[in-house]
Length: 350
Image 1 (cartoon, one colour):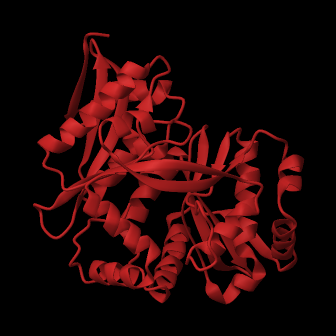
Image 2 (cartoon, rainbow, N blue to C red; image 1 turned 90 degrees about the vertical axis):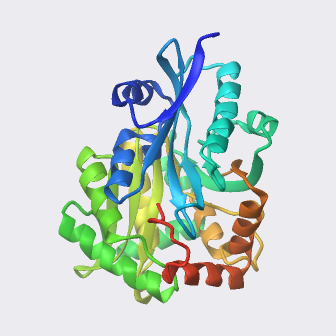
């Protein structure tokens, strides 16, 4: 493959479609549709593509993230690259080297790069001096029957699902924008209660317009006597169903509506022939003092496997700051406060 080269530019839609159609590891966050979502809210997507004699082999959708000024920018990439089946070790090594070269030419302050699950790129990244960010998630293999998936749940998960049913919690798909908007209003209220700046309504409207219309985003909501009390947005491909965002009204947590939505979504994904159900985020070492401990334990009970993997970064200060924000409640409060005051001028937290 002596003619292997790379480009970093605007999307070549035709070539990117080849990658999407051939890829075995496709994530919505690496699709042309997701690029349209980003552009609609003012974020510029860029595409790093590796080709062999003009034929696409591998691609990474990235976007700029601005901090204190236009001149202090980094790049982020989620769930990529996407690759064609015939890609070999030489191409992967070339890609990681090209990624580092691009960031140098762009004078990027930092990089946050989350590779796909089940693609071990550690040896290539470490060879180019990327820094590891230890990460984990819980994933349910949807290969077994629905009956087996139910049996695989821990007892407390089954009891919670049954409690939601007894409490007359109805789980359904939100199909109109008015339902999505109702969910968004609930989401904003809960974010303010938790002292977190919510994602914008523009982002949610774009997900509805570009992804829901293509049947690759779903919003399952829980209702109690007609009142919406929570919901989860999912990104969906034949390969995986990933929880993108979820929120539940604290006043109704005793009804186990969260469990009702998760089991409905697992059941739905299984019936669609999807391979994996990804809860999105977990602790490598669950410690009771960690603020995410209860969330980690909730996700564990669904018969899910804890998958440990590495995300990557360039810039030690970014890694230190990220770890402090995740591990220290005071630093986390300070970061969110700076976001709300727009002193940290990120676009939308996508």
